[in-house]
Length: 354
Image (tube, rainbow, N blue to C red; front, top):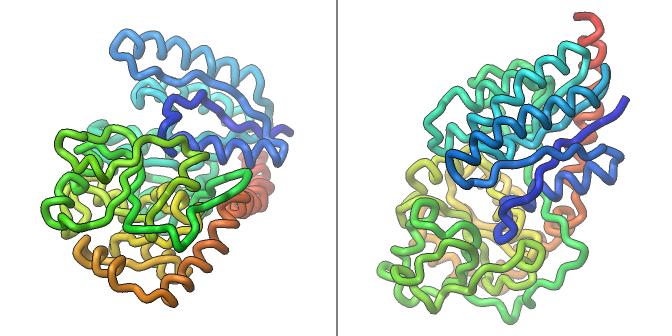
């Protein structure tokens, strides 16, 4: 019996969106999972969608010819593909399942919660899984509402693999880091910070920053994911989304109540404490681990950055460093895959009995 992990060529090298997938693949390959390459979409419009239909059918038929009874296929969901086009893979998935293959879906995002209008997309995929890897208990609840009846294991937090780490020394840090997609749609609040907090010390990293409407002095540019942890200059990393300074609003703000934001892993991999919205799904994790502070508003976030004592900050840095070491080594991925391996024998037995 063989374990396969579906892999796609990364299209987004300038931000950490692809790094989470790449890191999962790296850890799984170190555990003898076999990569199976499928082609992603290229985000080039209608004609490319038509081309991708044929490619998707061909790639998944090729997988059908490879997979045997008892084999396990891990899919990192959603595929890097036009959402509706990816549905053309499902008939192949069903045929492989009918022949005794098992499918594990590791959830990276739930598109419906991010405002994607075709609401059945997530549900159609989720209900085909034999086992689901969720982010946290809140996401697991959503998956149950989507119709999942299979076992669900939770990763807790995504790893952030690094061959070596050289974070900015504590004595050289200043202000608050904000890393990630800086577009108006995702991070509109960034463009309101200067008006409300003109004296704030902010370090912005990431693509799609609107220099004309944002404070240019704050912008530090785009840095590759493997290099970014060593470039982050702030005392804290901020986890916030939406258009408001007083709460996390809109689709992206609400998504934080369910999602594990990968930027939390980024900050911790840089041995950096975090400031997180207090209603975010991972706010309890941050507080329990002692690696940051949960706040209701950005006014409160600024007060934390200005007012925290050196001893309090040093204690958080130590804990962030300890947790960051685990993330850099892939500890959480290995732990969740151990849970997967523990469940697989019973799933195989159930398969034989059907």
